Each structure stands twice: as structure tokens, then as C-alpha cells.
Amino acid sequence: MQGIWMQRLLKLYQKYAQFIRGRYGRWDQLNKVMVITGLVVSIFSRWISYYIGDLLAVILVGFALYRFLSKRIYPRSNENQKFLQLVTKIRQRDFKLDRTYRHFKCPSCKQKMRAPRGKGKIKVTCKNCHTQFIKKV
Image (tube, rainbow, N blue to C red):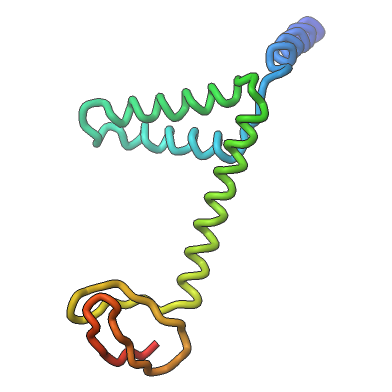
């Protein structure tokens, strides 16, 4: 009895391996993000009107499945590389800005500005309205 089930599982695995041969077949970071986002959207879709959440969840999971089964390996790999570069760029930018600069607004025109941290009290001139004020950074 046990041998029959093992033979069936082995045969099923061989069919799967034959089907997936020549396809992208990777759960890379972009696929993982799309599937997880799709599942989260499907959980919260009951609070989104007009079935937009359900539709968005199906599109995200469907596109991840399309990428997984695609025979165009290099374009899928390039998509993942571009996604990783974008994520890395965003992470580095956020980390760099938060650590090295102090962000504040002009008191008169509310223009967003930044100054390097650790300079003490500095005299700042707004580029928009040319108001001068002192700010501790």
C-alpha cells in the first residue's frame, strides 16, 4: 500500500517537473510581495466598496502566478532586479535622510527645508520667500 502512494507521488512530481521545465518558476521577492499584498488586500476588501479590493487582490495574485509560469525567464528576472534596486534605493534614501538631515518648515510660507544635523544654531534663509530665521539643528 505504501509503495503505491510513493509511486503516485513520484509520478505526480515528474509531471510537475516536466511542466515547470523551461519556465521562470521562482518565488522571487517581487512575486512574494505581490502575493502577500494580494492576500492582505483580500482580507481588508470587505471594507472597500464595489469589489475593488477583491479585484485588486485577484489581479496581484494572478500576475504573480503569470510571472511564476512565464517562459520568458530573462524579462522576469530583470523585473525582479529592477524591483530590488527600487526597494534598495528607497531604503537607503529614507535611512540617509533621517540620519543626516533635520527637516523643518519655513514659518512664513511653510516651504519644506532641511539642514545637516549637528551644526547647532544656524541662520536659515528660505529660498522661496527669502525669510531669515534661526533654527537649532
